[in-house]
Length: 244
Ligand code: S3P
Image 1 (cartoon, protein in one colour):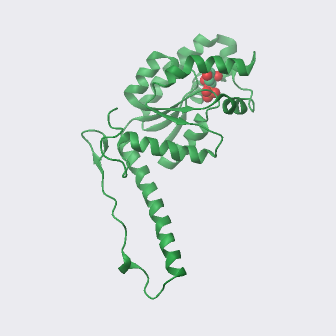
Image 2 (tube, rainbow, N blue to C red):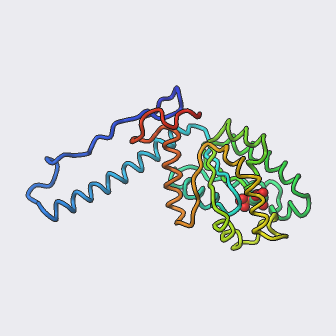
Image 3 (spheres, rainbow, N blue to C red):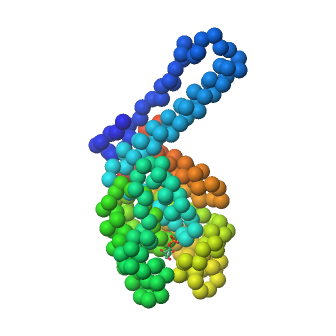
């Protein structure tokens, strides 16, 4: 249930779905155990669906904005998160490419990074008008003060924070990042981490991105979001409600 005045969830007590009288009569021992474990699994699924529905409702028109370095998993996690929340997924870099009629690498090569950054900031400002959605941004987007302010006004920022080896392992698989096209990726990524991590730390929520199946990270993001929005049935009201 929503508390519309605050745009956050009200809490409902979890009521166990059934008591001993609902159990199938006559069965005991193993069959009862099986039945109980089935009910528990069903209940867990229901709660997950419930949690996702509450997140969606509490979001209202806000976007969930994923930020983080190249290789943090913003697109992969974002796509899955959108799917689970039944929201549109938007990739800012793809939208920039669409608007420019060129790939990000081509824009960097032909017009330079400052030109790309201007377009990036404009495109993200436009995309943020289209919430609710899950929006994955390029690694440099959040470094722009105007973009940060826009995200704060119209979205909830989630930093997918990853250690250097994880990022390097992932970015080495693809050669489509102009910032890594020349020079030592290890050195470039270290420098970017030093410069960007203190700024990324301004995000509303931080989730550690690790070498785990994307669905695990997606579940952690959903849990963190639910807490931040005050939707978590198990959380006491108030925790994570300070930020709006
Ligand atoms: C960049 C990251 C890229 C892309 C561009 C610049 C950056 O996006 O926007 O190459 O400055 O970190 P991903 O983070 O999705 O790779």
